[in-house]
Length: 232
Image (cartoon, rainbow, N blue to C red; front, side, top):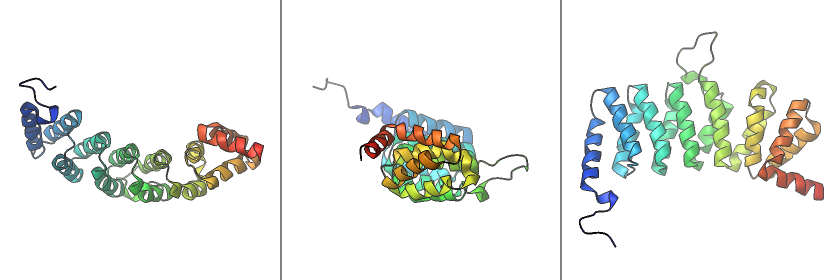
């Protein structure tokens, strides 16, 4: 039984007053104040619809640090209402770090709505056209976006990712994605993914590819496939 004079956490007037104050800080001109308010709302696990709308609006903030804090917090709060604005950030934000964290947030949310945009990022090298000017001797953030998109597709586990991942791994230009890609295929409950891994194990051109395929098949889902193949 609830004690006299005590109120549930979500009805604590002091907490409500703090939240109202933090929401007000989100509108201040000082970007550091906005960042602090975003982080505080995240620590307080404030995920009501009004706060989510206010946070999502800050994904268009002029300061990339604010946008970065917002995508991280939206991923932690775990509300599916954040999926659409996070996808928008993934496909349009000029700051690579923001796009990278948007991918990670979508993976945490297990957002199946994000599968097609993530596949696009995988196929199109992380959308390098969004990168800010990059030196000839440097790599843009788009490559990390692509790598994180691959990992996110494995974490979400949607079969729509199977053939795009297989296509990428079949291209020798993407050998650097092979290890993660094989692991991602082992996470997808799809016969096409299993067939590809078994083919790589049996006929992979390079020993490293065969070893990576074996490791993927030894993963919990992959092990079942290899065992079924031996017993058939």
